[in-house]
Image (cartoon, rainbow, N blue to C red; front, side):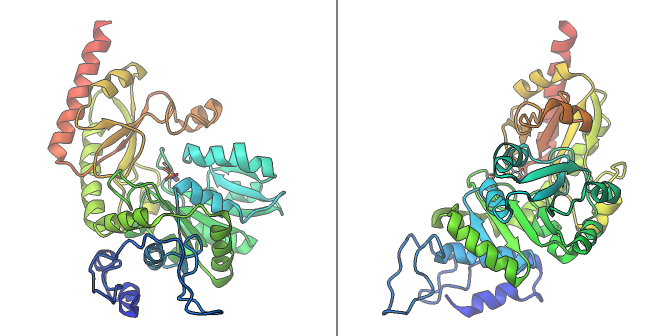
Length: 399
Ligand code: PLP
């Protein structure tokens, strides 16, 4: 692979839009292919005993995956990138840093699958977690124990969009000698780069905005620092939940258009949130782009934009079922971050594994819908949801 491509990718003089488009475009010296090829090989011939092309066996290192890994490391301002078979595989690989007796402090509101992995699996290996509002330094301080090894933060959280001041928490964690791990799935490096604010590890469900087309399942890890990067390389290879060459290629293809997609997602989501905010059947809208959101100022300080995802609460839970039945352009489906608009019912889908007591305490109840606003025309999207709410109202009132 040519060094030109790597240099271009790492050239911080270029704006992120250009660096995204250039992923892999100048790294194939033999044919000059602008789209980096899929190297569908698991074994690589050794020139002679004691020599290697740099590739030996695909679990350890694979050419197509390597271009993707270098690109995400550069985009997140980290030192090394690791591509995994899913976001959960990435989290499991990160959690393998910890041992029996270790303790983690974790965002109170977070993706249900992360909670399930910690509570149902990691707990069996003696790794425990305490769930707190990570924006509350007093809460972090009071839950800190000598065995605390890391703080895991989602900001914004999924689905309630709570915001954590990353600089504040990272500096607290550094003083305690605790790692800061940030799930940057919702904002992507296009809008937020936590390593620049002091974080040590980034995790992505690249299935979401990075892939962007609801067609590739993938996870990414980025580490800062030589020692942590070497430890992660060892775990990534030893656990083996790595991303295949075809999916690595598909993910890079999606990432090239990340900038224009994120801008359109953001525009559509803001227009949609404004529409819902004034709708008589809507109780509240959870979106950090709204000035009324409690995390608005922090979000503005630490990121350059907002994702295309928010949640909203209906006044009456009886509206939920008919709305999900009547939306047509917006699909009732369980994911986020793709070009197609998807609506999810967190309390019975993505967050069903979080105990009802916690869900109720944080406001994740049966009136809440999560909306990943796609890049369709905003007027079509508003018309679709408006019609579905009207039809739901007619059904509820006729009972
Ligand atoms: N992190 C967040 C914030 C998510 O929303 C998800 C999935 O929805 C994951 C991690 C897990 O990623 P994956 O579904 O790619 O395994």
